[in-house]
Image (cartoon, rainbow, N blue to C red):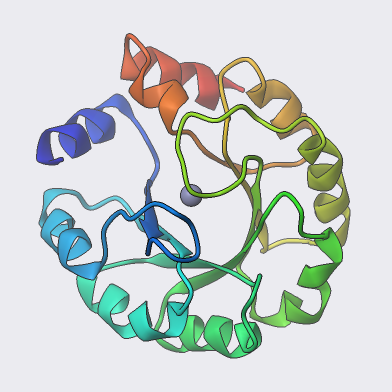
Length: 197
Ligand code: ZN
C-alpha cells in the first residue's frame, strides 16, 4: 500500500478515496481506522473515506483520529443520517451523502444544510470492477440541478476515461476512479487524460 500511495501521488491524483466496508451493509469486508491511520504518514493528500457500514456513527471519532479529511455515509437504512452528517462536521471533517443506484435524488433535500458533497454511486456498492449503470447519467443531471456551490457532486463506480466526458458534462466535479486507474498501463497518463477533461 505504501508503494501504491507513492506511485499514485507522484502520478498526480488529488485525493485517496478509501472504501470502508463492514461485511454487513455490503458483502465485502475491507479495512477500518487502524489501517487508515497506518497509511496517513505516507502522504499529505486528503483522505476521503466512503463508509459502506451499518453503523457509521461508531467509526467517526476513530476516523478523525486516523487522519481522515472527508467522510461520506449512506443514508439507506439510517435513522439518524442528519445527526451523523452534523457530527462529521463538528469533528472538523467534510460530510457527504452517498446514494445507491436505487435511491432517489430527492433524499438529499432535507440534508442540504449539513452536506459538503453528494456522492452518486454509479454501480451497486460493495465490489470493484463493475460497469457504470447508464441510468445514473439522468440522476447526475437531477442532483446537479438540486445542489449549488459549495456542495460538490462526486461520482463513484465504473468511471473510465471513456465515460468520464459525459459524466463531467452532466455536472460531476469529482471522480472516484478505481479499476480504470489501477489497471491502466500508466497511472500518470490516465490521470492526465482525466484531468484534461
Ligand atoms: Zn467508494
